[in-house]
Amino acid sequence: MTKNYGTAALAILGLTAIMTPAILLASGGNEVGFDAIVRDVESRYHAHAHRIPFMGLISVVAGVSTHGGVRSVHLAEFEDVNGPVDGEELNKLVEQHVGKGWQRIVRETSRDGGEQNLIFVHPEGNRMGMLVVDLDGHDLNLVQVSINPDRLTDEINQHSGKHHPQTDTDETTAKTEPESDKPSATASE
Amino acid sequence: MQRRILFAIALTLGIACATAALAQDELPAPSPIEKELASRASHVTEVTLNRSMLEFAAKFMDKKDGDNDKESQAARQMIQNLKGVYVREYTFDKDKAYSEDELEGLRKYFQTTDWSAMVRERTKGSAQGTDVFVKLINGQMQGLFVLDAEPRELSLVLILGPINPDSISQLGGNFGIPKDAVKKAQKEVRK
Image (cartoon, rainbow over all chains, first blue to last red; front, side, top):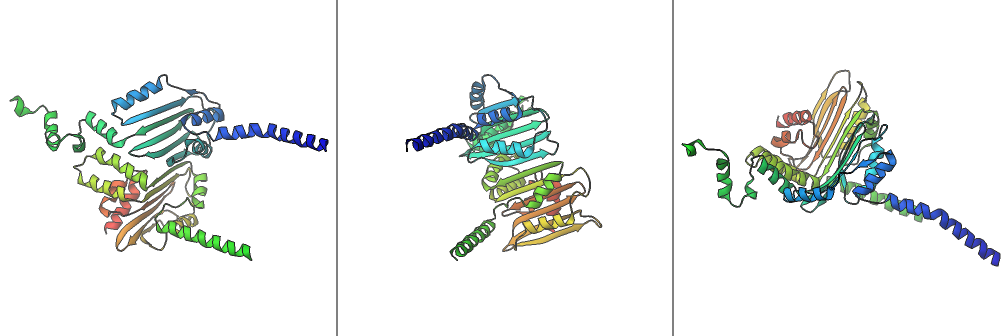
């Protein structure tokens, strides 16, 4: 009887020893988020991600300068991706880690594996999360941003000289502004 | 016996769900033929946009083109009301990379009862040609399907939702929709 208990205990210990690394690996594979994608790309393609220093600060500056148009910027750059990349495999890798609610809207792939583009989006209220994966030869870039289209286009229009009536305080301002932009000939006369 | 009943229930439920999905104008899953084509193509572009994505994309179109532009406003309105856009573009290294049977399979896969053929253009002795199908419900265009087969390129465009024939061309060049395919469709729709 005691011998049976001993065998059972040994069996449980053995199973635990085998299962623990497997469970840990499995949970590691289900990690979600930008960093999880970067880590898996590094491990799968034996490439090293170059991170831009002070990315957090850059992200804050981007948010402030675009008045919330762009924020939560994440960027990783790989310059040493070796060999042809299987488009299907890269897509699965990203899908596995991108997280719930993200949808792929664009996929561009070349058979030789030298060119792969993926765009995933995630609606976040009036914002949209966007993840772009771009492989060109040995260079792979991963970019994730959160965009507010209203604020971003307002910001772009402001700098390109266009003004949107909704962004101006009142209709009068909207009507008079294009004229004020031009150095009017009549005014100088 | 009990197993058979369960199987019958599951089958009925499956059919009901599939019918409901089609009735709601949801974008279809890729057909097996597309997977075959993709494996032979040297370059593949896939764009899939559902309703919420299109609503969001319309916001970008709005201010980019300026609100005074009536045409772009109409296009924005149309895009906001669309239920889905599905584009596939296959580029091949050599001619005759696809067969007439594959094209016919694609036509059948994307059509349901409400669809009617508007254009059927064929090049003699080859699989090349253009097909335009429209989905008409109560006289209103509720969908557009274009299959454009060129010697080394195959484009497939499916647009679901209320479509304004005058604004179709505005979709060309946006969301991966080939301009030529949309122009051809607009020309025929306006006839």
